[in-house]
Each structure stands twice: as C-alpha cells, then as structure tokens.
Length: 129
Image (tube, rainbow, N blue to C red; front, top):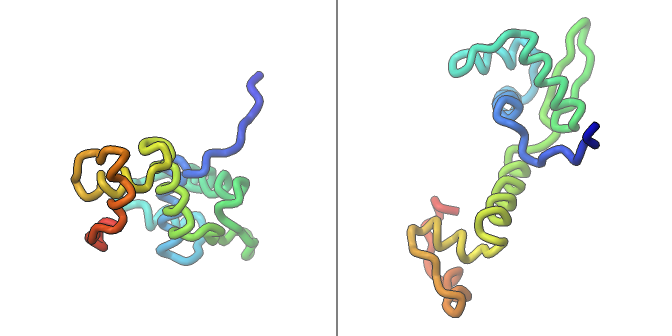
C-alpha cells in the first residue's frame, strides 16, 4: 500500500472551481455552491458536498454548522493561491528563474545567461504581471 504524500498545493480542477465559487459568494452551503457552478458545470448535490468536504479536510475551506447544514468559507485567499500557482509554474517550467518567466510573458525568446540580469529593468506591461 502506498503511503499518502503531502497534498498538492494547487487543488485539482473541480476543487478549484468550488473554491472560486466560494470566493465569489464569500460563504455558502452546498446548495449555493452547486447553484453558482451550475451555469458552467451542472453537478449533483452529493458531488459538491463531497468536494467541499475534501476541501475542509485539507484546510482550504472552513465550515460551521447552521441548523442541519454546513456553511463553508474559504480559508485560503485567491491571491495566496495565485502566488503558490505562479511559484509552482516558475519552479516547474523556468527552473526558478524569474527573468526567464518575465521574458516569456513579454513574448521574447529566452535571453542568454549573460543578459538575464537586465530583463527586470526593462519596462513591463503591468497587465502581464
């Protein structure tokens, strides 16, 4: 039997969709998250309940009891998760070299190692950052 490793930092797509719904709602029960997802991705109530329970066990959302239902709220901000995602992208595809990532985002070919220190000094389009 395989030992469980640490959970991935970026949630899988369906968990991320539920988190996005909660970020927009602020907080909500299973039904409100299901309804928020319905236009783009209609899911069964039990599917959303399972995903929110998973997120709660991972610590990505908190929950409190309200009557017979749980009310879920995100424990991690959208901005914090974006930072994690960009860091993973940087480490995975650019070997941690921020200059190479910036050059890629600007549509420039990969700069030679000698010229990399000047990439951050160039004026950047703020929309790319």
